[in-house]
Length: 419
Image 1: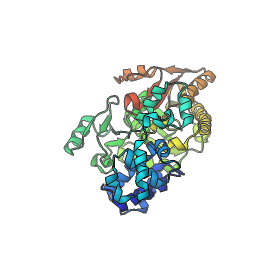
Image 2: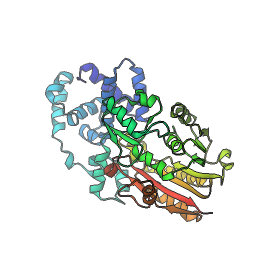
Image 3: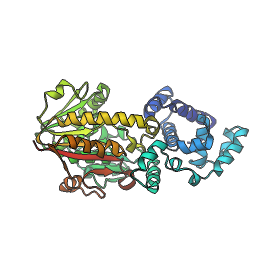
Image 4: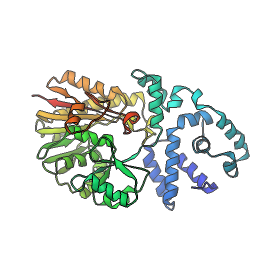
């Protein structure tokens, strides 16, 4: 997109709309595009890329610009991260801004504190320093500043991966199999997958490879009774249904009617007939009590800080805090306890989050096991190897990282009930 005064104003208006972060950035950006419905696809893409780029590097940009206005953030971003020079910017900026931009170009990122170089809030750096070296934190932060790749999952009920790859090649969409998930495909670039015939016919769904692997840890079988406890919009539910070959009974529970409504069109496309979405009031809902001790497998993708998804949701750095982590821990423990109560003896539960923090991961599982001796840990590396999925750097727990696996950061523990 060639930058004109009108386009610069639009970009500044978009950043101004999003920056208070009173809602998720993607929701606010959708509202902005609804307000500017005449914008073309290319303009939308460029604005979205710049907005998320600014959010990914906001700590450094604010260091450059002080208590920055939306305009200053945009100009600092274009100068430092989009490589625009003064000659290109001169027709678009005020004379007083020229000297300021020259000063911005001279600031050295490598001389900044760790929190600014890694683009993490100081409270998060302090938490991570308990478990990682500063060098590891910096590398992780730099990786999370990059956009995530576009991963899709092949619906094995309707198509084979080779068939989908061949169809994408015919459409001149560059793609390759994901290295770990046997039903995953990684696409180069950002084609409009939601308008693609493969998507509209239910043969593919957008889903990060890490999220796909959670389904293979649960490994539900045909004819079983299975629960997706925090189903959301149903990405993992649909994978579980396909792994069950649409046989058995799969409950998709969530407290949000809106999220479950988002599952309905996906379910219709998928060809699955064994999924039963149901809204619950809380983890104490009467619907759950009726299923206690009857379920073969339970997926618990617990509500969490989402800090492992910063490539996609960089705004979470400002929307989480030490206090919100404490609140989430209480919720996670209550949900895990309620979900575990559904299992019959011999049943399997996967507890998962997309968080970087042991407080939401290992510590929750260890606390649960200390109070529930009828449960034991199954080793994730062994369970995946049984399905010919060979994942480096994993063992008892699944610990995925964008740094090593090019997925979102996922943690998972697999628990089995003995009695």
